[in-house]
Image 1 (cartoon, rainbow, N blue to C red):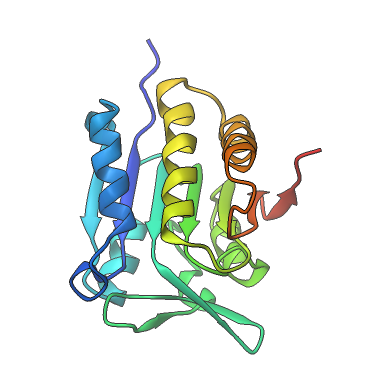
Image 2 (image 1 turned 180 degrees about the vertical axis):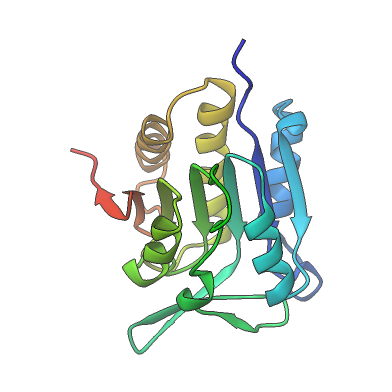
Length: 192
């Protein structure tokens, strides 16, 4: 019997300041969907903590709930204390490991730009999903919940799960924010 893939949720937002947490909501929804045995939740304290958790993760799939900013053509993620994590800081991840994460979902505004996707793909992550534009908490939570339900419960591939989730959410909510994009080995794949 094949082992079910596992998911790591890294929460980089500040629930105390914002009174909400997409990562925690996703963890709760995974528990309700009876998938909690396959999911690990980590509240990230800072930049070093994030980079260590990301580099040492053994899960197949990683979900990063964060704020993203884009300034002068450069994308970065923010830690809970608003320190910036730049793409060049992601270089060299998983360098000493044979098994790399198969999928990373960057649930952060503007995270779908090539400068943030490239270091993850170059490090060996096969698939990356992220929004190109600003995305709202509720849209990110809707998309992520449907995506992981298909991926983990139904055992579909990341591409099929993405396609079904994005088409389903857009059919129900035509103004889905974010302009989510799917990358395979650093190249965008479009739904036809």
